[in-house]
Length: 103
Image (cartoon, rainbow, N blue to C red):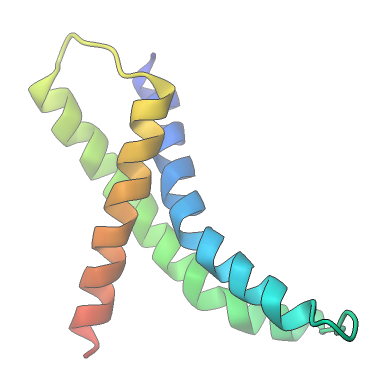
């Protein structure tokens, strides 16, 4: 796989690992047993903005992760699922670093 495509899959893993819990929480809030709650676009943006900032940090981390992988495997190929899982796993570490620095 070309490095650009590997980078895209790593970013996809980062995004999936970060947005999955947020989307589950949002679904629980807006889909209670009594019906669907409406929310404004401004409220959605306010709720999602911190996640987007961390995803931007994750995109930078994905580039670093790809560089680390390439330094260890300069001639090898990386499968899409390996890149995805690398991004998925490293996002958790990045999130912990961001949370611990604000504690």
